[in-house]
Length: 510
Image (cartoon, rainbow, N blue to C red; front, side, top):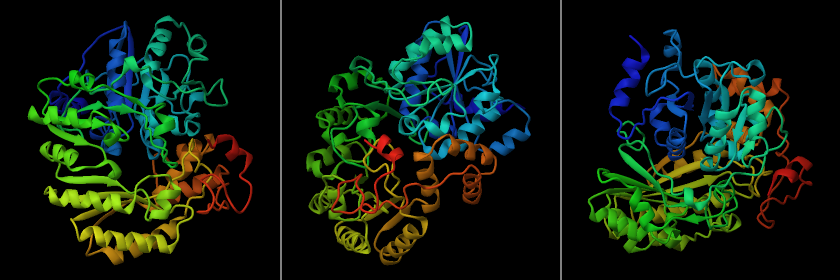
């Protein structure tokens, strides 16, 4: 029996809002991860809807199977969700990518779709391969060996451009000619450097879900974007640069996108508690009996009124971001969150009957010392005396387009040593959820790497492991050009004590 009938059709039948269309130009929109992850991506759903709104274009979805090896043993081609056609049988094979660690999954998805992953090995008879999403805006260069077109910035501005070129082009080079020079269009066959980013005009916003499904990681939740961009100056975050200038949507604009049948709404934004209409929208929805989901709320703008609205919307655990283990490091990152802000949030959560508070933070920041970890441990115990606490701890990964671009990665041994101390001293105090230091190192390599990192991924995409990554990176000649840089608390992010930043870093850090 076919994979589509046994694995995909049950998912399809549970969806609300699926689009079915036939047209001369077929687009496959793939997500290089499992269905439940891809369907939680608002950007992926927006691009799916926009392609299907284009004249002469029909777009169907495809996802990487949960068990790729088992799927490959069936000998079948990767099917699309809507009709089960071969995903690679199309004019445009587009991938939306959210995470650096999906680099090997991108290559695997092309492979199981029957497309040769390397751009130079494909011909005019093959589908054009386009890659977009947060990963490409962060760092497109590891993708250049694989993509014909890389989209950088807001997809809303790009879909009409790509669709028009698909309608008019008579060859691959003709297609390139039609899109060359457009904002957000990076053609690895022609360009050495990324272009000006595409920024969607306000009239194309807000973004909102097309499909609601119980099989998403955000089960049965309709997503709507309250704001794009961020007004805050946090130095480690890509939101200000990746998503362009801060654009707030009006309250009624958001409410008008939400169908009457929706039971759960997720408000999306980088700083939702800064969004001027969060309370009004939240209160309006909860009065309609709709449950609410939100990304983390800034502790400095939390008040009892907002917390009450979120509790009425079904929120049981309050989530905030500290983003650094100590007050001095939060100041260095220009986070704008104080110890008093976090304590206030804990008290509000307890007083309103929330089951607990979850705090996200990073360790492994450049100027970090054992004293910062001591403060984290002490402060967590203080929070735990107010309400139940969970810590989500991630190693700091420097990213392009931030002042921290050339900061060193703290190192696996350093991070693991600090994590062990935190776990030992807080094991009876807080629930701890931490990200692997080894995989954070791989993420840091991809986040700042070039085409050579893409080729290292190509060597190992069928058998990925930390050891395989180390061996492949050595074989392609990768070296860590940033490890000798020494950030200090007395210097702003992007300035170092030990030596001048390399010309490469100076050219890319902003």
